[in-house]
Length: 167
Image (cartoon, rainbow, N blue to C red; front, side):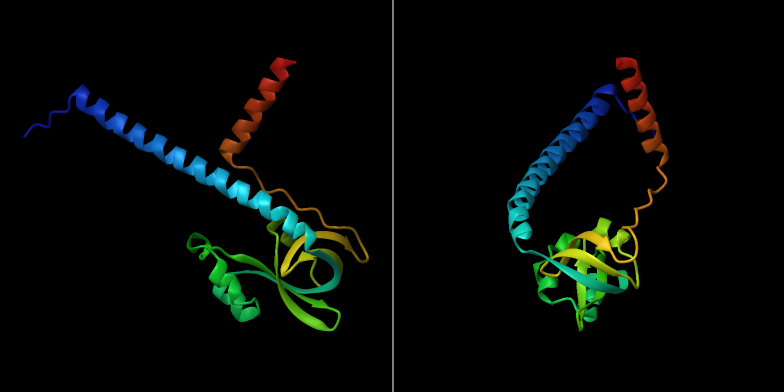
């Protein structure tokens, strides 16, 4: 039994695949713009509700939403989380603010900088740690850069050569 594949059939299949990819890219572009607009609308509200606290960082972990709720995050967080983010892990920080122990959610970049067992002054909006202002007895730790992947290194080399040739 011979399988006859013609150039016309291959072309049709490639065109269908190309059309599907274009539609998918359009949908992703639309939803990306929509989410960016929502984030820009919410940013002034977050900034208006920001308060500065001095807190002792007791523990920090990345937990799933269910584990974070068991650790002390309000249940409303799970109810308001979209279905596609339910499997994502949250950067959760246990901190002592004054005489109270609180469980807070942190920005991922701030989470890496927060030192354990040290007192820090941070900007908090609700239960969300937005930024770290200072650390008592030292400076804010720098986030160490992770090793770049193969393709990221190639991209950087190509951009450097383009920048060098344009001068």
